[in-house]
Amino acid sequence: HKHILGIEQLSREDIFYILDTAESFKEINTREIKKVPTLRGKTIINLFFEASTRTRTSFEIAGKRLSADTINISASSSSVVKGETLEDTARNIEAMHPDIIVMRHGASGAPHYLAERLDCSVVNAGDGAHEHPSQALLDLFTMREKKGRLEGLEVAIVGDITHSRVARSNLYALTRVGARVRLSGPGTMLPPGIDRLGATVCDSLEAAVEGADVVMMLRIQLERQSRGGPLLPSLREYSRFYGLTPEKLKLARPDALVMHPGPMNRGVEIASSVADGPQNVILDQVENGVAVRMALLYLVAGGEAPANE
Ligand code: CP
Image (cartoon, rainbow, N blue to C red; front, side, top):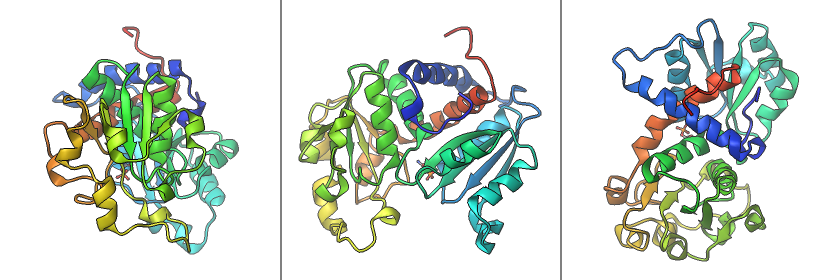
């Protein structure tokens, strides 16, 4: 693939190819000299129109560990604030001959729009409420690493499903590799018809979590709640019904993983004791994000998967 726009466009084979490539890169991140010459001479631009801690930093580290030149542009300190359009911004960046643009944008479809108009590769680092493909891939990488398999896993995803690009990308990815997905959240945060994408919609957190191998908690996407609609329950009410506490986690399998893409709102969707508890793999997700993003940059730049897979 020249671009990585979403999981929807990836086959089961593509997903495993990316995970296997990431596995071969993971070890580089623990070496004393954390750098290989693989993408020497390539230029990668991280173009972020929305806030980010994990995704932007790990794409930058991933590029640097592969010896690419990485440049970060955040919209708030760019000429976007002077009224320049997305297309003009991208065309001006392209005039400097980058090989890859990694983009996060608040509008669904923004990276697809650029991919149709630019010659360089485009990697989606999150587009509105649509997709966050690198996040889903690092989530699958972490599940496979900890559980030894993906097929047959029961994965509960709980929270603001409607506005979550993480939920959508995970739903595509997990169903494609044979895992089963249960979704739960307040009625106003569950998009109608989501079950047609292969998920089981549960009417409570407890029903979703019971017997699960993985419990993935999501933040309420306050920035994406639709204008004018009284969609948001009080945080106290939300936390009572959709917050993961140690008691509710006991309903899952005893060896269940607790995951969260971050940023977390402790005490809202997840109790601090669960976020820091023995079943959490939240920082493993972040660590694996570097290896997965190294694999994505390497593969869109035309690299072959390693011979050992
Ligand atoms: N998970 C995630 O996308 O985090 P950031 O918003 O910090 O990049």
